[in-house]
Length: 344
Image 1 (tube, rainbow, N blue to C red):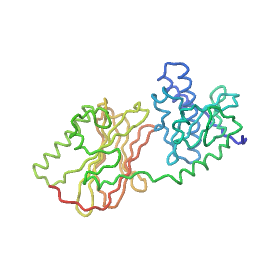
Image 2 (image 1 turned 90 degrees about the vertical axis):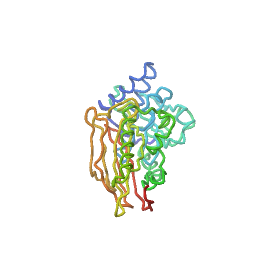
Image 3 (image 1 turned 30 degrees about the vertical axis):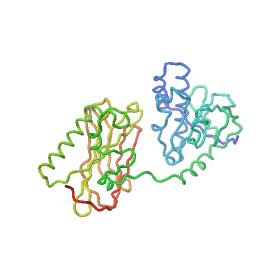
Image 4 (image 1 turned 90 degrees about the horizontal axis):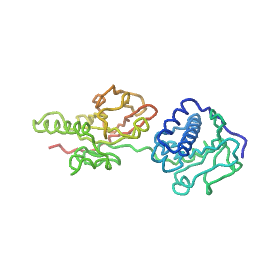
């Protein structure tokens, strides 16, 4: 093994995070496993961020209590690169243990396996090195590549990664929605609304909000209002551990305007069994250069937050970011030039 390694301090935040997950598991052995796995992921996460990589810890399977219970898993998602498996190594051990479930069944998702050795006090972790692939449960630490090579290895995947998905709002007028999005009208056309969003129940608050918006649009149409009737799409967003992997719904309404512009309205609504949005969740509008143009934040017992209605010229792009604690989710939008037929 190359002697170059990296030490990472395991802060109170790291241990608080580990204890939070540990409480999900009553079996002492499983609870200890989850605790150490969480510390290992924290250490690798800290290291990669210092190296300039953007990580998505809350989107990793290792933060899901169900996966924790079913598997010995310690993955970390790295944006545009894939996943890194962060394996804990006990003090004085000369072996790296990699359970079969993270290499035999889903090994294609892993870009590397990092050995993270703890001190006796669990106050510090040392990133000993990594390997690209494993074919056995135990690996000698002498076989590891230097941790310095990890960045180079990940950059190879980053160069090959496709650009992030951009939703073309213009296609919504033809009822063509990107993966994960669904028209609000189609929700109400389903025979059983509780089957919407892949078997997730829509709670009464969300259903009521959507019904009110739908009825308002119908009323304007009946009154032949001069205001354009919007086309609306909705998507569930997993805001991660802060809500125990529950979701909120992003609702985007668009309407054709004059001078090759589109009017846009973005709202955030609670879903499932929650009647209110989590306090302090933020909804932000970002320019194509990632500048914050406007922002809305939920207070106590808010059942909806929204951005001020804005216009976007055809051919332009923008992003909408949802953030809560350490979790940040961004949806990218573009409005490609398109020919519209007059709404009846």
